[in-house]
Image (cartoon, rainbow, N blue to C red; front, side, top):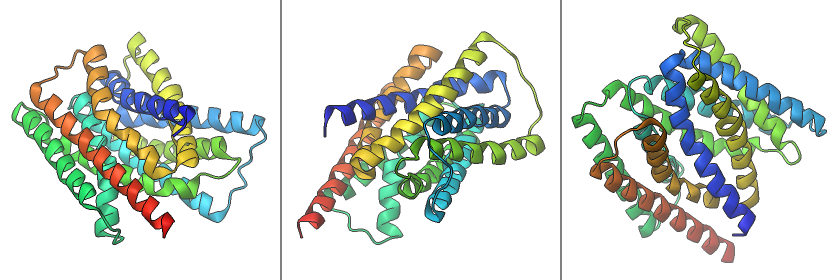
Amino acid sequence: MDWRSLAMGIGFALMWSSAFTTGRMIVIDAPPLHALALRFLVAGLIGVAIAAAMGQTARLTRAQWRGTVLFGLFQNVIYLGCNFVAMQWIEASLASIIASAMPLVVALAGWMIFGERVRPLGVAGLVAGVVGVAVIMGSRLSGGADPLGVALCLIAVVALAFAALTVKGASGKGNLLMVVGLQMLVGAVILGTVAMVAEPWRINPTPRLIWAFLYTTLVSGLGATWVWFGLVGRIGAVRASTFHFLNPFFGVLIAAALLGEPVGRWDILGAVIVAGGILAVQISKAREIENKART
């Protein structure tokens, strides 16, 4: 892996992990679905405008349109929608740790649904990931974490796994930023419609809300998604997903630094186990791909 890919991967992990902390800041002062729909509308329009200025067009293939819509639905609507709603009641660090298990869910789905072979190292990683998440959830639930919030985060991570499976179909050569902007507009339309029906409008326009909204729109939203699509196109989804093993650590540390959320010994132990499980699964998948390439 070259240095540019390494920098992109670490940068993506930082931007992705920080989204939970800024998301928690937003839902304290604004309705989650309205805020998320507005975030996608702003980021999507900016992305499409910049892409058009760069000469990119929305003339995508049928497969790219299908991937773009599915990615917008699973990641932006279901995954982020569930997480933003959940963070009204649970801490950002818990949401980030659960979401970081996405590569494990992808590997498990590949094994159970698509019949993909899983090497012993991968099986050990899956078991470790489940154990790590269970350790953290058990500790947080016994400490009073809201069960509904935890359930929404679990639904969200499954949706994120499905979103990851659509990335390859959505990313088009030469139209990357246009695709990023379009999938955000998909999220804006669906979430905006749901928000108008399902949640009342309330807002407390604090400086924290304004800065958190700008950051999550431009950095965690537009920037992280652009980097992720680019990283997948550069090194492939399997190797790119390896960087998710950094997310449990970054998510907990950023939430502790900016929100003052406590970090217990069970959180640290669980995060280490989850990170190890993710790394084991991704190494196993990478070796399997290498072996297939040789045969």
